[in-house]
Length: 440
Image (cartoon, rainbow, N blue to C red; front, side):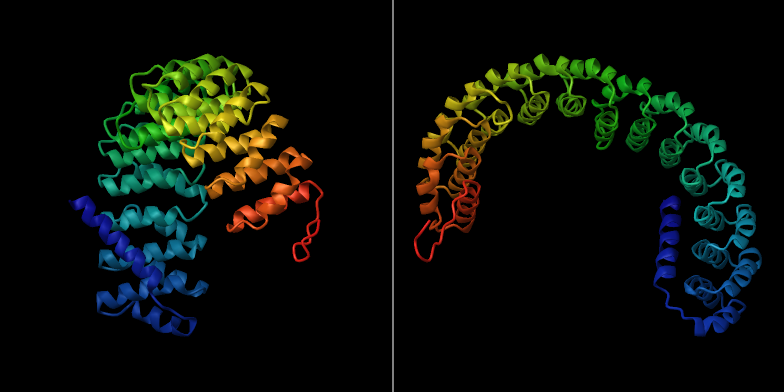
């Protein structure tokens, strides 16, 4: 509760600082107000001076930071000095890290994060041992911004902090610093009791891109927390390493469906034919989660291996509409004449979903087979607008003049998208239509 109250107070001061109106003409008055007997007026003055772009405000704010009797006034001065970004404030802010009030120390930490100043690194490292958890929390965060390798070992130590937020920030900062000394400690952090820490560790392992993390990240795909599995998948997608293929293939048989899904998604980027057979098995399994089967189909397209064509053709009869649609879309990516007749059958099936028939129409245009001409011409009269539009588009791709008359008639379709597709198709066929005169 105390931690939450302190955070609320800090955020409130920051928002007030941003919203506080101040103009240069008021500068002298605000500086004078820093000495007012009313501490609230002094605080408002300290915050207002952050919005005045004049170097003369820096020294008065430094004096407030180091000498004011009220901690919330000193804290406001620290925040304003951070916003102003004048290097004269760095040493006073470092001194602020020793303030008796934890709120002032936390504000000083955040302010130092605004400076790219190496002299702040060691004091911020020391702040990782502060008795106040918020000071440690912000120190762990800020050290990731300063890009100094001296912070690596202390941040590794901070992975053992008693507060999860501190551990999480330390994990995130280690990824930003990019030092491989952090790989093994971050792998261990994947077992942390807090999901936030595990998730940050997974993200950082992806940023470090060290192959030692591949297997632990695959195991993290099974994590029950709301964020870790997603970050592990994101991290694995950053590895363009063939050594990830076999572990990902094994993950396709994992009992946790999320692990299977993330493995299928990660395999898309690697584009390795070793995954072909397991992906086909996952796609063929009617008891598998639909989301995984669709992902497997998309990954098979990337492999461009004709051994996937037959399973995709069979999937046109699958009981799950999403799988049928994925198969219809995927078959257009393979240069295989085997797919033409099955796709024509789907296009002509009036009981099939119109979206799937439209996907079949588009794929027929991509396969460049004249057997599709007549069915596509007939589809220009379909009751569904998306089927008509896709049929017109594919007839343009096929480039067969037998479609000209039907496409000219489609210029009178009641749906603008269909008319536009017909016009574009005729343009590809080098046919110019003067519609007002009814001439070609």
